[in-house]
Image 1: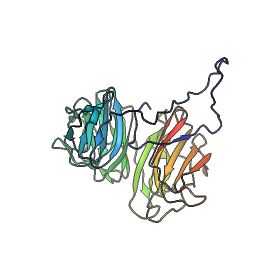
Image 2: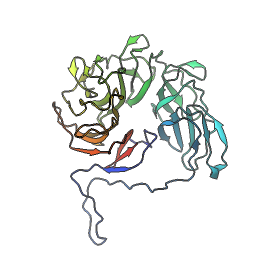
Image 3: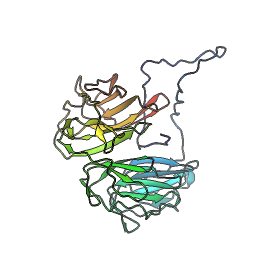
Image 4: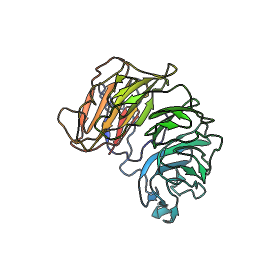
Length: 351
């Protein structure tokens, strides 16, 4: 997936090419062809990015020469280099990808926060998900489609309301997948995960799963989803212990090649362990490699020796069997990781 970033906080680098050692080759020796190796960003990549005055940024995505951010903030200011002007732009804002100047013409009016921003069905549109119920005074509960140019509402897309927060979105062809804390979408019963037509917003019959159980209290939810490059499978994380009667604790792989979708035979017990009781579910993010063969999942939970609490873990996806164990685990030493992004042989971890 070609993206600027899905997440707001990205710092630190973890090598995830477990079987490959990358070294600088002598200039007089021809290098054999191999997988691309990422050029790591500098410690100070830009001095002109705008400043969020309050709240937080939950999602970032670049659309050509424009960067769109969504979150819980209400004000954003140009950097001192660009004059420092403060803009009242709650929950969703945009700035120039080269200069960092806030785009005052991008001014959608939302009544609550944004959790996720992703590209739309063409270069001119984007989707947002979150806690909001209205966009520019029009009823759009939790999911909306907007124009990239000015943030105005694409009125043709209307899912007719959701009864709970949306935490993540993914677009595959003309199908939009939404994950969150909802149990009803429009007139249909859909629990935690749903697929809708990306043009109209109509709920499809392709995804209708029955989630049950809670890992450690709290409420049921799916917080992060990612599809494989061939769009045949979807990896999900959240607070659940079974799907369609099959035991899947916090993490599951969904087979999208069937209609309706089914739970894959792929299964791991790595996230069945308990962490600190304050966390009902402690997975925080995931990403799938460009070839679709493995994923990296990051967690919170407070350090527990030999458990998946406060870890970064690689799990192979190409062997769809039960009892998959991590290829490797990196313990953070008791610190939370909120986000992960795999790019050119490197996993970027934010926390």
